[in-house]
Amino acid sequence: MKYKKPLVVISVVVTALIIGVYFYTTNQETLVIDDTVHETNYDRYNKVVDKAVEANNPDICNEIDFGQWLGDYTSSAEKSRYFCKADYAVKASDVDYCKTLDSEVEYTGSIAQRDKCLRDLAKKLNDKSLCEFLSDKIYCPIK
Image 1 (cartoon, rainbow, N blue to C red):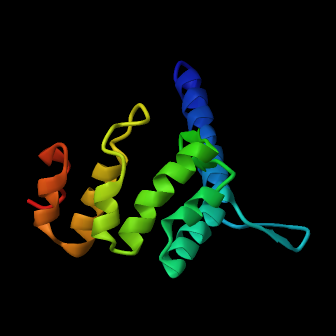
Image 2: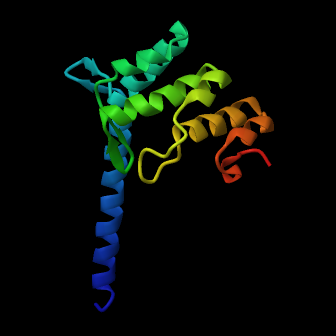
Image 3: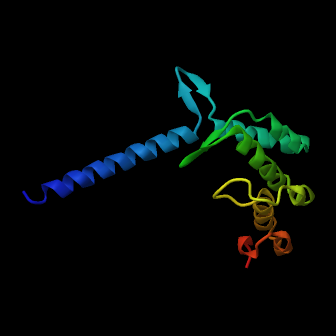
């Protein structure tokens, strides 16, 4: 009888984790309700990035008028537009555009758009020379 209370606590924690994982995964995938496909904002964001790459035009990122849920927090439409430009440069492997991005940290808990872009491009292209342009070499993914 003295072990009953910890078992209840463990059951509640496990149930909460299962529910949390369920809601996280359903918010990251395309939703189907009444046989109608509903894209998540994450899907819409990626389509805008792809469209910008196909058109070779990062200004298409300015079309984003929605935020998105990113795990533990949501981003505003402004943040989504901001990061879209770095994601465009990485996907398009556009080093020159990447170097023109904002070098100041705009959002708490983030790195500068330019550093994010250069870091991701260095990793994608396996090009350590791009790390020379980072504001802090600690961001360099290549040792």
